[in-house]
Image (tube, rainbow, N blue to C red; front, top):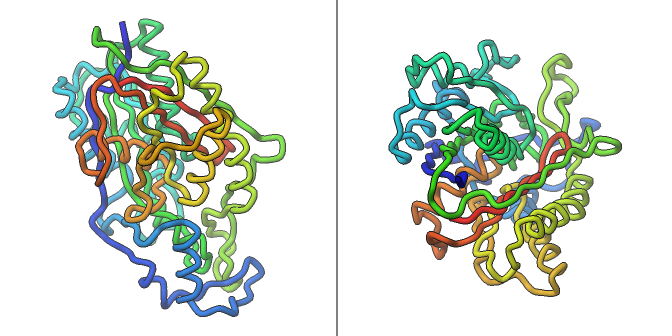
Length: 352
């Protein structure tokens, strides 16, 4: 028995927000003082560092559970399964449903429950639950689905990663330009086909790293102090990711027994182009090699950082030949890797 992704789907929001669209924002330092540089300079530096030129936001009528349902329906159809045969729905997100203009999250009932309701699944033995694991949530959801299937508790699982970060950003914070919205979903099944999940690695670092990402006040000191926004210590996250993500990838690859030469693609969380490139360089440096050309597909330039949705969306685009100059074939080996709030890190070695 092998455990494979048998179907995938994604939802890419329709609202395109370019860096130029931030021109009228008033960016402030964390102490509330204004930046000396004009927004055009800020936007240019931002693009040079992150690689992000534009990002996608959901329309006002959609919430995280809505776009997750859209991606889930596509994945179910792609896998050609009856949704009534699902044993688990694992929904990775971080902020729940935040309605446009709202100041609080809505996770009652859970978003997984809402997706199951929207899919009109009657089977009560299809267990639906949410996972809060930062940006690596979808990868961790796949690892959990594998554990359920290996133990005999499940045969089919739906794993979703979805987020609407546009609803929780402080528009006076330069970091707000990083974040975006999106959803990705996959069906994980026991199958007699060759390949599937070969190894995985997970870790949580909290001793010094727990609050590298957190909820904090707006940089605009006139705003309501009881309304909180996503905040991050960018430099510390960069250094942490650069040190720890390659280690997790190396450990995972060694567990799998697959030689580095057999890795065709590395699908890494789309957080920051420079950071991802540095991670790949350090990963291959361990093997005294340079990264092969085209090893790391990127979606961040046009889609931004949609947290838990970036890796499953990237996978869905890759398998559907929607990434220019990138393709994948049956039997190819790929690595999934992610880092995010918690601070959590994980990786999977997977054969198509």
